[in-house]
Image: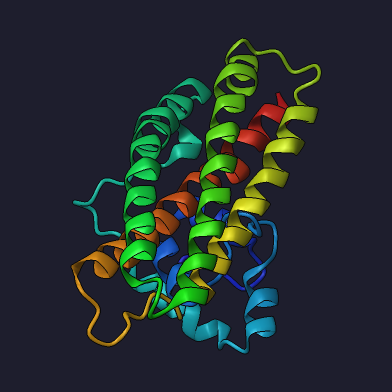
Length: 225
């Protein structure tokens, strides 16, 4: 195993060094996006996980020589921001609207059989949708232009706000996962609930990667500029 992959390394750095390690972190519900500064050993002890086993799992994810993975810490800030805008921001706006339609329809059709959970899910989701839309707008109109201009004075304030909002998003995602029982489908679930559960879990996966790129790569480099 690469000696850089060890229990004393911050989780965010492990995710940067080997992007496929995030598969292992997701499997064990290890927060590499907002909690990327914590060491793997610390988190494994807290969760009761065998850190050596987790490291072995990460080792199995190390890509072979024919697999080219983008190391975003090796790319420029401009390239990384363009990736965030095209891979995450633009598709996210469409997906948020699509999932709202599905969630509202689920409440309308199934609210009488599962009223508490579906109503709570819709409420959390709508709050998350509003938070994300406002958050992306602030990044696109304020923070990203500051970073691209090379302006370092005053960048700490919007970055601190974005990090706090990322934590709020992560909390909402955890609430949605808890409400759905880790996205375990209810018995006799129809296509509507299947689409909603699958869509919300995919949203979680994309947002974790999105937040990771900003919290662990984009923002630290902007603060060090």
